[in-house]
Length: 161
Image 1 (cartoon, rainbow, N blue to C red):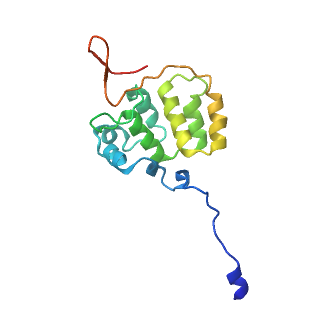
Image 2 (cartoon, rainbow, N blue to C red; image 1 turned 45 degrees about the vertical axis):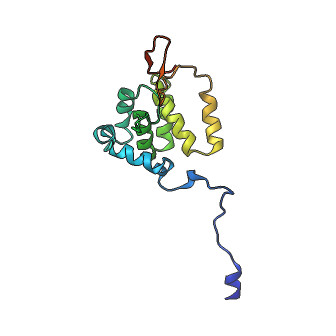
């Protein structure tokens, strides 16, 4: 009995709380944002029953800018698609197809969404290897700001390049 007590079985943990090791990756998104996404019309209409293959046309048709939430707290389609990808947890082969698009690289917002997913989920070594492949991608992306900016004619600038 004393010999059994001397053996300590424990899992080696990181020195900090690494959220990438949680079981449900959707918990990487803050709870209030996650609940607002689940309550949004876009999520219920397009993403609720989406899987790895049906999310691609949704991303290519509806994601036209990168944004988080607007000034009213409504989540953008980019953030909603990111949450759905975190819920689906696609395999690494599928993520590679999403990021490279079979060497076509036609959809820049799909690539941006996939790279953000990789940044949230993968290990640091894998992140560096994948991001080195995309370091020479200089395509412009639209970023929608939380609070609008105005130009010299006092017209709102909706997107920032």
